[in-house]
Image (cartoon, rainbow, N blue to C red):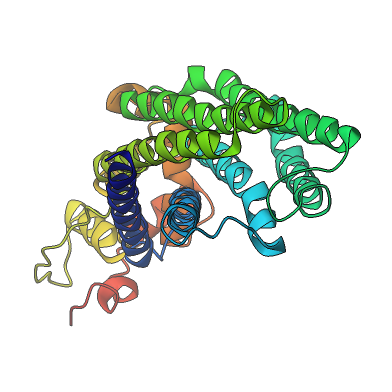
Length: 339
């Protein structure tokens, strides 16, 4: 009964995860005229979560159905890094959601990829050379190394996650993003620490390998299911989803200022929130003024302005104002599918 439940949970988890991947790819496809760093970070996170789920789904099937308990070099190496690849992609997604300009955040950004790459490489080396195909060691010192390394890896993900949250969380006023970051951070780190605890318990002989694996598969399947479900819901709710101006109207060449603003937003695929920010910026409002008027953070406004500049191919507010006042309809005619 438990085995069937775990299989069903993994199947649903993989389905929802693939839904999230598909959603992000579709958003990126329809948003290719602007910045997609946040979307790419979300895509990488859900892809890794699906890979992790598929890996344990296949491993669970091999062991409990096919009775194949050995793991070759490739499987052990993947097992060594996949949990922490999930942690890395999650930390990168936190960074893109918060988008904090803090100098302290820049320091953490500088060393995040290097630290995780180094730790995951050493983890793969340990799993390949200190563990045999049955995940067992043959010396006391190698057991000590494995146990120590599991502690180091688990704490590394926790430390980096906390650092990114503590530095930039106060600047994030978006309630949906706040809730998403807290919930997924708890789930990702609990998943990693649960895995670390079970590995350590096996080598300290507190549990048998088979019992630990069953507990790992069961808990991980549930956690990944919840992670992917929350991610899909978050992507649907966020304003960087592709809620573009779908209805295109015929516009004469003698455009009013308001009509031209709508044409620019439509043709360059600005989101509704980006359109609002663009109009307020054109009207002369500063970033703090825009943030107060739209009830969003200054850093969110800064991110929207960055996207607007990229999509409109301008480098400053002055160029944005000049572009609107020029009413260069020909520049946007083909892009909007008219004429």
